[in-house]
Image (cartoon, rainbow, N blue to C red; front, side, top):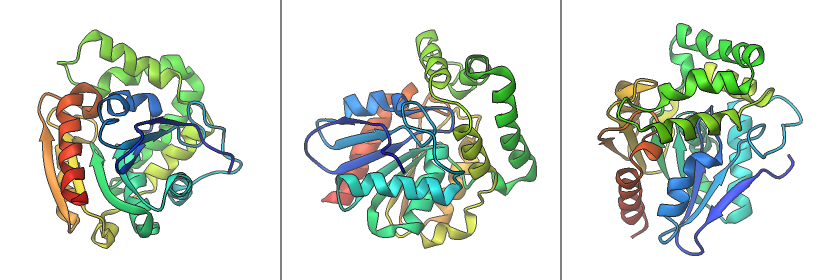
Length: 256
């Protein structure tokens, strides 16, 4: 696969790979690239077919996206702590079972076991690619972006989320991502994750929701579960100081 676009910050410390949600890009991790750079080497990808990364040569399933993330880890070191938000969390969990030697630990934020846990959710996820094709990225982002933050979010954040989505999503990459989510039900493989995991969820997340994060926390062996107060689905952007504090605490525990 052609090299993917990656944003980088920090020169020393543990390697932290950030995997964005299905409607986003590396731009979603600006608060982590800035706020964690003194403590870690932070890298945030644009997934294949997103943002500044090239379109994949062939359709990708969840394994394909996990393998692409594995290649990024290998390009930077022998292993990484992996932070995945929403869809990125699903990729991170599959990465941890498919390439356990590459995953030192996980931070899974506002995520789920996949849309394949419910037929209605799977169908709705698959329908998104058609919606994107019919409306175009800007209208698609204007309709979906505001739902990703809580009612407490200021207008500037809502605008950034919408602009990030509008500049990140396109076909066929978004369609491959939606299908990878629609077909995913990771509940049975959670017990196979050996990496210590921090599960994080905004208390006002209405997209995947607190219950989906609790399913992850309950199915993983080495796990801690925390709630970020006054945050919606994008807790890492809506409450970056609180979110980053939890990430740093996790990294301190697993690297000491």
